[in-house]
Image (spheres, rainbow, N blue to C red):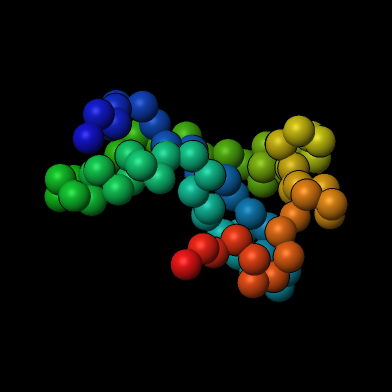
Length: 79
């Protein structure tokens, strides 16, 4: 694996109704996988605040896909 474990993963802080905010890994899944395979217990990370998380969600090019581009349920897996 050529994944660079010195590059920080990015964790978003997501508001949860009637509960404490949740952590969501939004960048770095390959780094997390490599660290797990190598038995590492720590990785550098950047943790976004709730306000920062909401700010990037409101940007059109970073937010959810438009309804027309979303896949229909059950479609997308190939056999």
